Length: 446
Image (tube, rainbow, N blue to C red; front, side):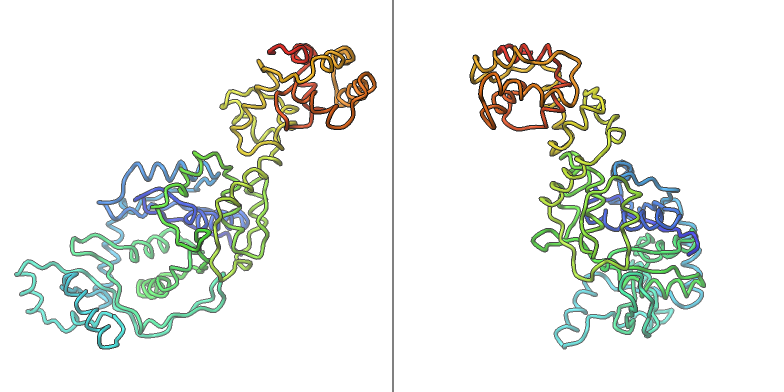
């Protein structure tokens, strides 16, 4: 394979959600796996709904995921290029003016449906004479412009679905330009893919029909076709479609909830495939797992509870170097031994602050049996503590008190940590240190 160029093309009209992440990560990981490049394109031709704050949020969300574009373009900066392409289509007779209002089109569709006909545009505008068009414009109507589809089957070898085809005779001629002269999705997308040299278009299966239309536009402009792949879509656990309205499933909402970015990326692309959902240590590792040929045709269900569990499992295997800066931001100037001791007990990274408090104090101990605690203090080994200190100490405490099992270990855990559960005390004891341990055994806050 030659070095691929892929793209993601969000509209800055809202926050990215987990469904967007699926397409974004498929593209990013495909480029990473094959030594390619990744383009971020803001599809912002809808000037009324596109907002700079949403574009900024998209960039922030991608950075959180670890997705760094090789270059960025904005469609709002490229209108002259689209104008030139539209002129070429007009000259070729593939772009024609239409004057129906939205209400007129809606009534026409309803009549077609009532007669048992497909609600396809009837190309009435092609029958208008120059005088008809002049009369309509004199009445104040402005045209929208449709692309004249050739009534043929468009076929391609889909990277996910295999042999795919759409009969364009069953489709309406798509509107490419609105009455106000602004562009809808199709023409800018095709022109940008052709102009930037995109080699692979990987997107959701809801774009299959769009692909047939766009292939005809590519061909009408004399542009080389990219390869297309259409993956299955994410739904909620109950089977509903995802949208920007589900704010808690936005990247911003997920980030604020404390889930791990690697877990979001892994679940977004591994669910709904033949590859098991699993924690990964890096995007490089994930890129080695993801294969478009493994993607199922059935919808992929996104389960928030599965994400929470995967996020915790991801934390449990992260090395210290991967979290050191994030720990410092949380106000936890921790060492590698501390991280390795506590990571297996974290649900979210923010939980680390509680274990830092256990180690550093001050902590109010729970001493259930002062006599037992005093006996344990008398046989506490001298420092320096190491990985064997806990075992030798508990053996000595057991010999001194006759306690065994839970009766031996639970009072010590409560005195040292104030909690009934937590990391292995063999790892925590050297971090707590002898001085604090003695004070806590005596019932003092330390």
